[in-house]
Amino acid sequence: MEATLSSLADQLYEVVWQIVMPTLLLGTGVYLTVGLKLMPIRRLKAGFKLLFSKTANTHTEAHDGITPMQSLMTALSGTIGAGNIIGVASAILIGGPGAIFWMWMTALCGMATKYAEALMAVKYRTRSEDGFLIGGPMYYIKIGLEKKWWFLGTAYAGMMVIAGLATGHMVQANAMAVVFEENFGVERLYSGIILSILVFVVIIGGLKSIAKMAEITIPTMTILYLLCGTVILVLNIEAIPTAFGLIFDGAFSGTSAVGGFAGAGIAAAISQGVSRGLYSNEAGTGSAAIAHASSEVQDPIKQGEIAMLGTVIDTIIVCTFTALIILTVQIDIGGVIQSTWMFGDDGNQGAVLTSQAFAAALPGGGYVVIFGQIVFSFTTIIAWSLYVERAGVFLSNEKYKMIFRILSVAFVFAGCVGEFSTIWAFGLATLGILAAPNLIALLIKSKEIFAMTKEAQANRLELEKQSEE
Image 1 (cartoon, rainbow, N blue to C red):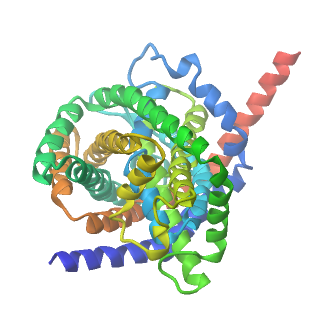
Image 2 (cartoon, rainbow, N blue to C red):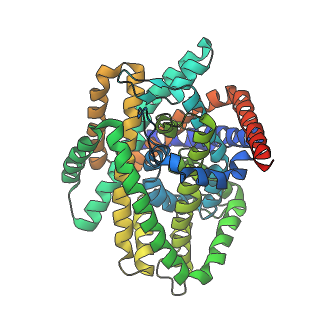
Image 3 (cartoon, rainbow, N blue to C red):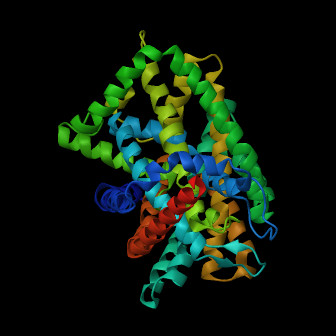
C-alpha cells in the first residue's frame, strides 16, 4: 500500500512539475514582470524603506488588522521553512547545482507575482463576521472577476485546504519529526503528540496570536541563520567562485543525478529549481496574499511593494546562503563531505546534507541547522493553519473555523508519523495544482494591475515634482 501511494505521489509530481507548472509559473512571472516594466526590481530599495518606516510598525486607529511588518513576517513564516533547508539540499541532490539558478529565476519572476497577489488581495478584501480584514485569491476571484469565473475561487479554496494540510502541515511536521528522531532519539509518535499540542495552543488565538509570534521568531531566527552562514562562507571564501561556476554550468549543461545526457540533466535542474523555488517562496500560490490582505495599509500598491520583498528574503538570500554553504564545504580541500549530488537522492538526505555542511565548517554548526529547522518548520505550520482556516471558512462560514483548526492539528500528527518521500512528492504536487487558479486569475486581472501601478507611479512622480518646486 505504501509503495503504491509513493508511486502515485511521484507520478503526480512529475505531471505537475515537468510540464505544466514550469511553463505557467515562469510564464506568468515573466509576463507580469515585463508588463510592470521591471517595477518590482526597480522598486526593491523603496520596498525595504517602506517596510522599515514608522507606518509599517504601528497600528492604525481602526486596529482592525495587523501591521504591514506583521503581515510580511506572517507571510514569511509560511515560506521560510523546510524548503530553505531541506528543499535546497534536495534540489541539489536531485537536479544538481544548476537547480539553484532556476530557483533564482523563479524568485525574480516571483517578485512581480507576489506584488500582484498582494495588490489584488488588498483591493478586493472584505471583512469577517468578527469585523477583521480578510482576503486572498479566493476573494479577489469572487469579488473582482466576472461570475463565470466563480469556480476558480472555489477550486482555489478547496486546493488550499488540501495543499495546506499536505504541504504546510505534513511536510513541515515530518521534517521536524525526522530532526528529533535522528538527533535526539525521540520517537515520531511522541514528536507528533507534543507538536500537535503546541500547534493547537498557538492557532487557537487566531490571526493576532500568529502575527505576534511571527514578528518575533522569524527575524530573530533568520538573522541567526544568516550570521552563522556568513561565518562559514568567509571561512570558505576561496571556494565561492567555484560554487557559482557549478551553479551556472549545471543550469545549462545538465550536471544532475537523473540524466545521462545534457537534455535530461537540464530538465531535472529546471524541474527541481522551479518546484523547490515555488515551495520556498510560494510566489504564485497566493498563500501569502491571505496574510497581506489583513494588513492595515490602505494602499494596495504599498502593500504589494512590501509583499514582493518576501521572495527576495526567502529565496535570493536565505536559500542562496544554504546552497553556497553546501557547495563550498563540498568543494573545500579535503572533501569533508562527498559530492553526493552526482549520485542522486530521493530527498531523504536533504536535512542531513545541510546539517553536515554546517557541522563540518563550524563547531556546533549542525545545531544551528537543527534549531533553525525546528523553528522555521513550526512557524510555517502555524501560518498555513491560518491559510487553511481562511480557505475553509470561505467554503463554509465562520462557525466552522474550529473544525479546520482541528484538521490542521490532526494532519500535523499524521505528518510526524508518515513516510518522508511520499509526503514530500504529494505536497509539492498539490502546491503546484493550487497555484493554477491563482495564476489564471492574475493573468485575467493583469491589465488592471498594470493600470493601477502606472497610475501610482505617475502620482509618485507628480508628488516628487511638487516637492522639488
